Structure formats: structure tokens, C-alpha cells
Image (cartoon, rainbow, N blue to C red; front, side):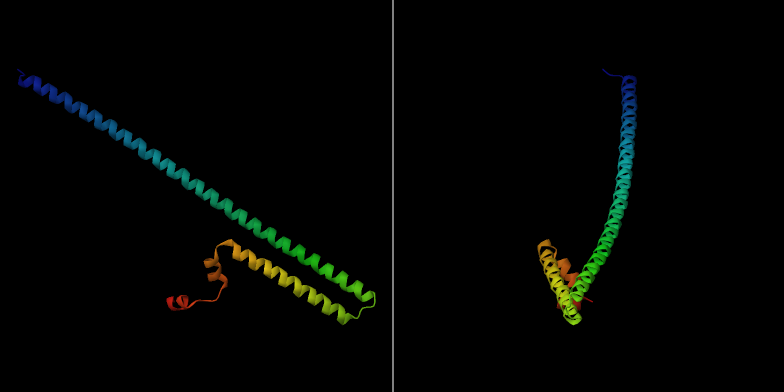
Length: 144
């Protein structure tokens, strides 16, 4: 038979084990919590750094596009001036030269417009592009 004293010792030992197990469990959860906090902090830092890098890339791309447009404009203007002056110096009337250069510019504008329009169709963001560049639909006017 088990006497009361033995039973009390077993109950006391079980309580000590439970307290020790609970303390280990609490310490484990604290480590998990700290690990998750560190992981979220690293993810936040990474996201901020990627956002900064993306903004720098967009700004750099915008500057490069502006430079390319400027250089193209200067080159095209020089080419038109050279072509027009050389035609005029060969005796072509200045009105014919002006009409030819304006026609050439309009033709190239039309070609570039067609290329851009075909590129927009192939992108696959038609809803967004229609929203940005298209005419407002009846649904969009009733939503305001």
C-alpha cells in the first residue's frame, strides 16, 4: 500500500516536473517569438531596400529616357536642317523643301504611332491602358 507521505512526495515531484516543463515550454515560445520578430525585421529591411533600389532604377531609367529623347531631338533637327539646306542649295524652292520635310515628319510620326499602338495591344494590360488613355465608359461616369 501507498501511504500518504509517499503519495505526497510523488505529487510534489510531479508538480516540480510540470513547472519545469512549463518553464521550458515558455522559454521555447519566447525563442520562437524572438526568432519571428527578427525574421519580420529582416523582411521589412529587405523590402525597404528593394523599394529604394526600385525607385533608384526608375529614376535612372527616366533620366536615360529623357537624355535619349534630347539626343534624338538634336540629331533629328540637325538631320532635317542638313537635308533642307542641301536641297535648297541645289536650287530646290524653299516651299518644296518645307513641304517635303513636314510630310516626312508626319509620315514618321504616323509610323511611330502605329508601332506604339501595336505594342500597347500586345502588352495585355488593356483594361489599365483603356482606363488611363481611353475614353471614359458609362460605368465610370456613374460611379463618381
